[in-house]
Image (cartoon, rainbow, N blue to C red; front, side, top):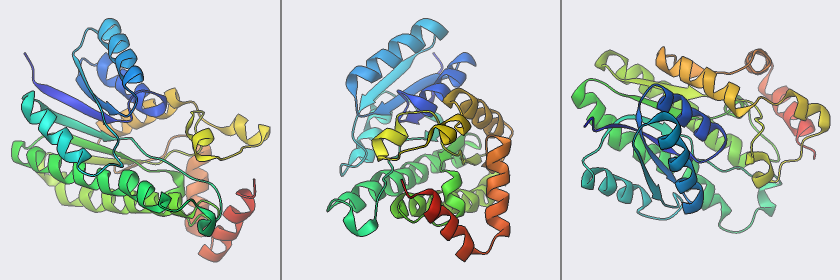
Length: 258
């Protein structure tokens, strides 16, 4: 039995589930980590039935201390080789920084930064030792600009992008590929959970998780460092690079008035 697995955090819905489907279609066995046990079991049943692969699941909250260590233990206990790591889990927020609930800043940093960093560091060592493997970190177009009214989210995604770019250069000659996915707004439950309200006009511009996943999978397989799905998002990122940062943050502040 092939003991190589693709580990996906937050793989029970949205972009994470769509990426899981693409790996499963190519006959990759999966190890999916998420908080909701019922959604995990539903995803496992669907993926195993539809694609005839093996799926391990682990219900765990990545904001809890020692959650990453429990993932390592599960991998060791089941003799799995994490051939691909998809750091998809993440949370967002909407509102003024000073009005965020006490303790939220720790929660978003733990899941968007700390768990992603620890999982990346742990499994990249094994990949380097084997001379093969890949990591896909999910950031956002928000990583390219500061984000008034979503300050913590934009800041954490800027970290993910910067870390991934650095590691891409460090390991590309060692047989390991590492990419950063930077989608714009996507039609998932993320917006609702973060409290972000979009106008009907903006909703029409949002990409489907299926299209984002396809772009991510293709870019990752080709070893691209930064994957930006959709022509409109590419133009947006290019504009952010050209505009003075002072103007960029003012435009974001205007768009985040909701």
